[in-house]
Amino acid sequence: MDEDYLLSRKRIFNATVFVVIATFLSKISGLIRDQIMTGYFGVTYDTDAFTWADYIPNLFRVLLAESLIIAAFIPIYSAYLKNDKKEDIEVFVNSVINIIIPVFFVISLIIFILSPQIGLLLSKIANNQLDIYKFTVMSRIIIFSLVFMSLSSLATGILNSHNIFTVPSLAPFVMNIVTIISVILFSRYINIYSMAVGVMAGSFMHLAIQLPQLRVAPFRYRFTIDLKHEGVREIFTLMVPIVLSSGVVQLNNSIDYFFALNLGEGNTTALNLSWRVANIPLGVFSVAIVTVLYPLLSRQAAADDTKGIKESFSLGVREIGYVMMPATAGLIILSQPIIKLLFERYNFGPQDTEKVAYILIFHCIGLIFFGLLMILNRIFYSFKNVMTPLKVAGLTIILNIVLDLVLSRFLDVGGLALSTSLVALFNIIVLIIILRKKIGNFGGKRIFISYAKMAASVAIMSVIVFFLWRYLEKFAAESTGIFALNLILVIIVGAGVYAGCTILFRMEEVKFVLGLFKSRRKIE
Image 1 (cartoon, rainbow, N blue to C red):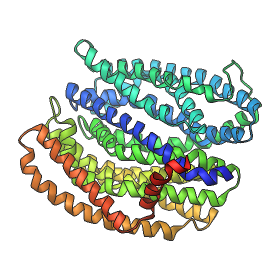
Image 2: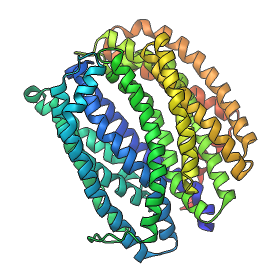
Image 3: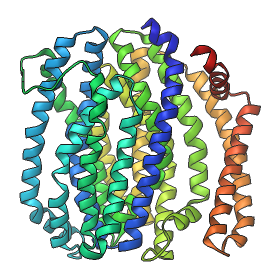
Image 4: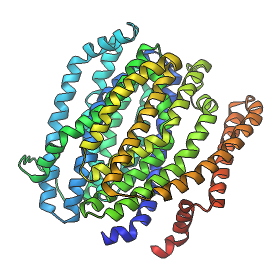
């Protein structure tokens, strides 16, 4: 832990830089995938059918694989790795692999069989407008990707525990590229089904590119399952609360999607597109910071290093705020031109731009909340405490349903996005109160001062961005190229103003990053 304490900041920065680049490529390729989909197929019940066909295996992957690996596998694996227990790692990892494969194959097979019934349910919610046949075919094409993606999540957990982040972060990029190629090559022959074929092929590649990196792990695959092994028993002990906790989050997402489907054609797709755009800064920066911090937090928790946990938590909270606050303001102010530039072409018209941009505003309100919630949950998971996030998340189900019902009446589908943001805020407030009781003061004053400086910088940036775009917008109509250049110019100016203000305010976060750049050669 002394090594972690001395080098953690350098490692966090260096690793985060690579993860940010890799994740940025993944998010951009995801946007291009969505551009291709909406350009070829529009925002219709057909794209709603694909969105649901893709959502269901992702639901089970997040519910049963990804969350279990984040909350249980990484802390246990990290503890064995720290104590150099190679025999335990061998038995533990192979047991998990050999449990995952048959379990997820059976789940996939059940969903494959029940796809027509699921499609019928969704069509009834959509006032019998959703094409049951198309949903069934796409669901059956995609569903066995669940096996590949679950194994891929396990591979990501192992590699992250060894401080290998770049290749796992690039896996979604490869998956998106494969999907894009599939649509371009096959859409003229198989229409919307080309999206499903691409997702299935891409999920295989998502796993395949990570396999060579697994040679760093101190185990070799063999067919063995030891249900009596301490680590395996611990995972089973943690499994129920973890699955329930993840289930609450996914249930909230499903509720939003059900409401969107009931509100009319293309609303599920529009809600999903808005979230993907909002998820660019969230996924590139917040996820990168949390991804790099979590293995460190797990080691610190295993060593009962409360001071280190407080430092890591404070650093993560401040860095997330430093990026998310200006991103929130920028996306809200420029929501319409951003969506117009990204998607408005071919079968995606101006009315679709207005709809998605409107939803995006409400999603962006919660950007910082989503980022902070990630790190708060990881803090509890690092202590192997999954019950607290579960109990708090459980309360959000009722809150989310009530807010969806009320807000959708006044704000239409935008109310669903606002509900998601408010639920995340509620989650954060409760978890912070509980965490403070557990570890004491975690530098709230220091965090508050940083956030106050960020808020002042964002206010200055917002005024400049708003009036600069209003001036340049009149020239942007001349061509798509000029529109894009003007928008990029406004974003660059806004980012520069914000960075300049934070430097003038002598923010610690800026000095920390600049200091690392200056001293990097000396440290290495």
